[in-house]
Image 1 (cartoon, rainbow, N blue to C red):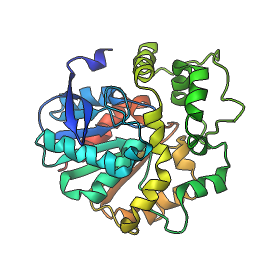
Image 2 (image 1 turned 135 degrees about the vertical axis):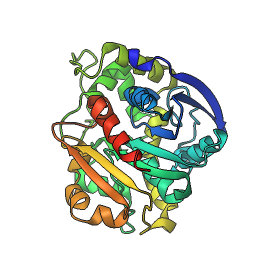
Image 3 (image 1 turned 180 degrees about the vertical axis):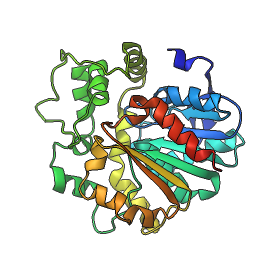
Length: 318
């Protein structure tokens, strides 16, 4: 656990919730936004690395996660709430502008922070999830069902309590290990008859220790999975709410990094969108796209040093 030494923790009142924030270092601020099913802890290596290079690394547990409050209402996990939490956090910390780094859902939130409040972001580095423009012709869940069917994990997450019950059957540690070790670049399915056995033996990769799993497990056993899964339950709500931003661009200097084994990189037409001009059209200040070979979804943990270097190489220009 050397990576977490010297990190300070505090709770900040933001947007009618209490948000847990980990931070380290002094200098220009870098806001690190984790994904599912993760915590501030997913950035432990980058926090240490950025602090050592003269930056103030700030990593919250997002709404619903860890030691941050988890409101019970599904609709309170909309993109407006998630971005609102971050704007309020910046205000509470008296930070007028920051660098932002996001992974997975954190990247989704970061793109929207850039779209709604570009005045607050100097530059953004997003991992795994590219900017996804709103498709006015089709709601997201209809799209996912049409492509992948009802056992696709995002579709399975929609039914209140169903995924939570399956995760309870398997046990928190097993669920987390199954997600963190997922390396199939194809879609993730959670079959109705069950997502494996609670007794499954799962070998951890070199970049994830039993101590790491224990930290995540203890937090998820305390706070539960409902808040995190509610992000997925807001897909169609977000589609409704963001209608005014149909066709809007992200006008913040941007860098994007993805592993070639990441399931997000293998969505239909995603590689064409990223590499053949669509992404650049929607994010005109996209300066760099990096595809890391042989790397899966949890890229900031799997390739911790390389990701820290990539973040630093980009933000030190500004």
